[in-house]
Image (cartoon, rainbow, N blue to C red):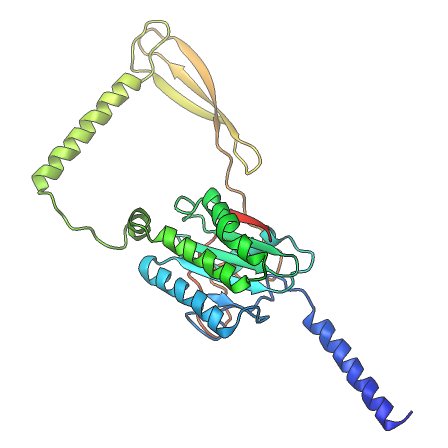
Length: 301
């Protein structure tokens, strides 16, 4: 075999091996963390689906939102996640990185998987009231998917970032997001506050009196109640309890069963052994340690 033929075969083998390596689908544990090299980054774009300028435009929206409200809005654009379910993948990535502040859980993840044509918005548990599933679905289908389906990936992702930022920076959202972090000025005197407090206490006492249970036999109040749980709630089933009522006036007793809501579904991590809060071990910074129970919306484009 001539030297030229062996050289060509070597080049072909190298190309085949390289294509196999670079075509390996991502898992949540292998997605490059956006803050591996930049401590304030909000965009992970390892496959260069976005140009540098496009990623910078998305980054700017996330930075402005973070400065205004503390919300961490992260965008991830990947080429291939194999046969993984896009929702499960994005949710695990969200919790693995700990997007959002610990305790406030005010993170949002926009996740794009190009090969499977999946787009997901995942919201932190503390922000679902301001950005409910229905709102996420409208943002996806009205503003993002029409652009993504035309191959305008950067425009679609930027539109999603802007729509979320706009919703989270209106007056009501800002007040709720900043509650407890900025002291409100005192506009009323201490005597006015005391009067309002007394009025509230009196109103609550009146409501309690009218709503307190009566004995079905003698129709008097002052019923003693003892609560007993028969079945504890799980994330699959509601809980079941029973209340035992006793009338101290006539001695009559009766019972009433009640149900409790399902428990939040626990997040199961199947990749790696690292903590789900903060994504430690990177060269740069990380996120705040937030978590999600799976709020948001998703679809195909």
